Length: 224
Image (tube, rainbow, N blue to C red; front, side, top):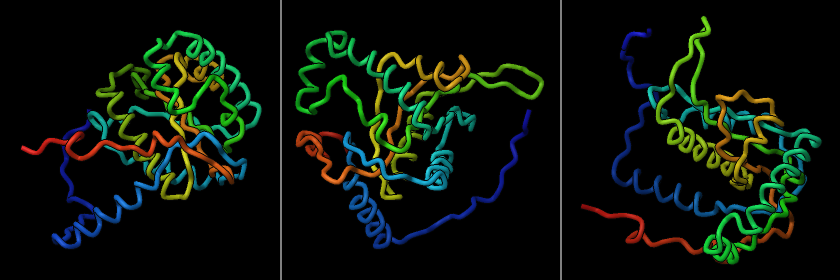
């Protein structure tokens, strides 16, 4: 068991009010250009870019600093094809009524259906897994904490890092996703969280008009 050992806060940055406002506005202007897309180019993206974005994801906070995430990065065409076939099987059941009519009605303005060609077109698929437990060097099994919350935050870091690299993403969540464990040879203690599609937008990529409508600050926040 590791003992608590405090160290000096590294890379601490102190900004005045004007600098803070400038920086947060700059970040907002940057992040508002992020959009989920479904029309990708097959233009290649280097492994180095994906790797650096994953380093950024790994800086996310997590319960007890256990970092309960695992990212399987898929560039191999045959593996992407297998994932598409399995995902579309689940999606066909979803759109055939499994989702419920209210959900399907909400999806009409997004324009989605069971066909997912982007799973083969985009250069990278990143399957994100929640590690439900971990093993020490002696084979002992241990708990992870706040797993879903931690992995969700890391995924947000990853999406933002990829956006900073000029790449587009799509969070794809066919349900269930157990097929990812089988196709990607992942252990049972790895629970599929989502499939992140990564690449450059197609030349004439579009997005649903509905996706540009965001809630006002009054709708998403309360100041007390």
